[in-house]
Amino acid sequence: MPSLPEVVLLLALGLIALLFQGAAIYLALRVPKVGGADGPAATGPLPTVSVIVAARNEEEDLGPALDSLLAQEYPGLEIIVVDGRSTDRTREVARARGPRVKLVEEPPLPPGWVGKNWGCSLGAEAASGELLLFTDADVVHRPGSVRSAVLHLLRERADLVTLIPRTETRGVWERVVLPFHIQMVLTYFRAPRINRDTSRAAAATGQFLLTTRSAYARVGGHAAVREFVLEDVRLAQLYRAAGLKLRIGWAPELLSTRMYRDRAEMFEGLLKNIHGTEYRLARQVGFLAGLVGFFWLPLGLLPFGLAVGSLPLVAMGALLWIALFGKHVGFTRAVKVPAGYGLLFPVAVGYYVLLVAASIRRGESDAPIEWKGRSYAVTR
Image (cartoon, rainbow, N blue to C red; front, side):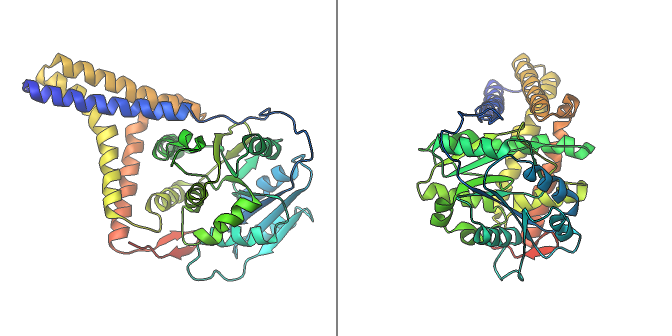
């Protein structure tokens, strides 16, 4: 039987874990939803928009994305595809959409640049719109999405608006891992605080990033973040540092994406995001400790309390089980995944533990990041 101080300590740790789960729910609920009927109608001419899609080996996804953009009823919409020297039919898919899609072919990738950033920078140079919309080749845009985003930017007087799409999941591993991934992103970046102009929180998603041309030029555009794999987050940080206004919203009715096609791509994609091009051992060890401490260890309190016959520990342990599993079922349902996958969240945590372990192994061996057939050196 543990002593009273030990019971008190375990109860306090359990309470901290419980509050962490509540914080994640609070942050998720505070992210505003941007929908098709969002905001008042425009009272004057809408600004012209240039949509920029940096694509490399995206023949499977690019067609539906372009078709959804071509179907937008928005005056003055310019669509630019920057092909990143693809080895598949990406260029042919873009050309097949006719003259409304402007195709820009990349020159060789300069030293120190990440491929996507190079493509986005070239697209911005070729664009003529007053607003620039950077979006990924795997994002499908529902009717009215561009108009809704522009109206949202105008109403908020924002310099940058980023919208979070609905994530489509088909395979078992996608449905187990990606709801947990979304939860982690919302919590880590304190998403709703991004909308507070006095906050230091800053993040964006390159899946849908709408910005005024003047603000983009003011921070130096993608050239200023040329070496960053997480260029969207770094770009948002530059906007914040420059005193510009950021807005983030959830737009499941306007946008959808299937982020990864198979398990191997999902592992490499999430590893790229966790690892980044600036590796820090302390950061990764702290992340690993947080995963274990906030998601795995709390589940051990109930069996421990039963084993030692401590009613307070049993009660706290039961509360943690209800909170943890209930929260993850809720997140899973919120992203339109069958609720039962939320019960497998300990497996999703294990997946993330493997990702962080792989990041540490690669970082300590100075291995480069591999993505879309390109390698990027990592700095310490």
